[in-house]
Length: 163
Image (tube, one colour):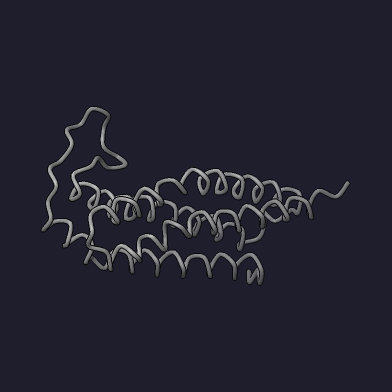
């Protein structure tokens, strides 16, 4: 049996699932810039956080199916697959650090715990000035630009296979 089409189908399905689930966080981050009501900001952050487990599982399936398809298709000698992995790793690290820092700054300004806060850490006091500053930050636009460009590069590498 030829597993290649099935692995590619799984890979593409995981990619779409990741894009759909992670798109919640991406658009939430952009919407936060225009929100000032702490209850709405908190609800948007909760929605973003809720979508992350789905996008994380989809990312793992995406990675596993891509690696398996690389073996079945004998792509490991081609540069495009290595470049794709490099772009994916860069995006994962960049988004994990910059995105979580941004959302945690907003959570702290709301007076709630952040994603990376240790269990039992003191809950910060709400800080309206810090909240306004965090919401006005261009970080959301930076994340959308880097993520969007990265996605286009990944699609280009996998579809065109330029090298």
